[in-house]
Length: 276
Image 1 (cartoon, one colour):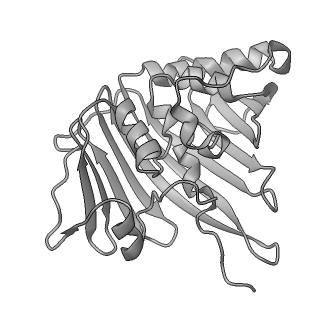
Image 2 (tube, one colour; image 1 turned 90 degrees about the horizontal axis):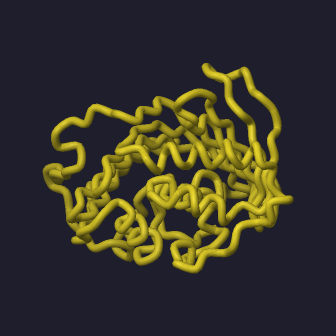
Image 3 (cartoon, rainbow, N blue to C red; image 1 turned 90 degrees about the vertical axis):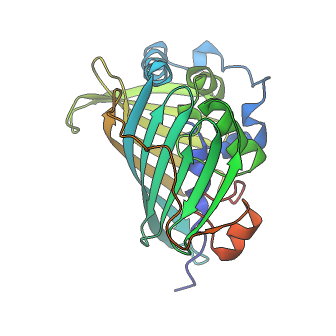
């Protein structure tokens, strides 16, 4: 077998909204003048209503926690697909607190914290961390991470309050597939397309229409690789322990600047964007 390649394919995916990757728009994803929404005829009205209800539910929540277990294809030189995975735990408290814990399939662990004043990224392997002052809201921190630092943050757009508008603008077609009965709750299975990505999403029925599963297919990439994620343990009113958004460096931890030094020591599990 050829050497295992491209463990990075979907490392940039969760810098995307719920399934439409940053690869769709690059650094301009947060530009004020977003692309116009698709024509109504390209999107089923029922499916659009379900999708936007989901996005609105998340955007209006004062906070939430969720666990994301994901897998993604790394296409080898000989065409074979190799799957790698990650588990991410997200805790958000609006307007200005977020915590992302990351564990990769190889056991590597990392952490991103924002407390309204500073952004901190920690990598357990190597015992290194980076910190930068960035006062503001979660929205401000997400834009800074993705656009300025060119890093990725899982569910980046989903963390922003303009999530519904962003989602509606990126989708070029949308359809209702079926009512699915195989989760612990009934879900609506939707299929959407953007310029480069096919998305499937399963959204829970009921008062909390939250995404339970996502599949992305990159149809313009060699081998049409996929990203798959199961979202569980949703809580829109999580109990937040004291110190959840603060970081105390472990004994012997080395503080280093963002980006270049991290690449030398082994990148954090939320690497620079554009690595597709």
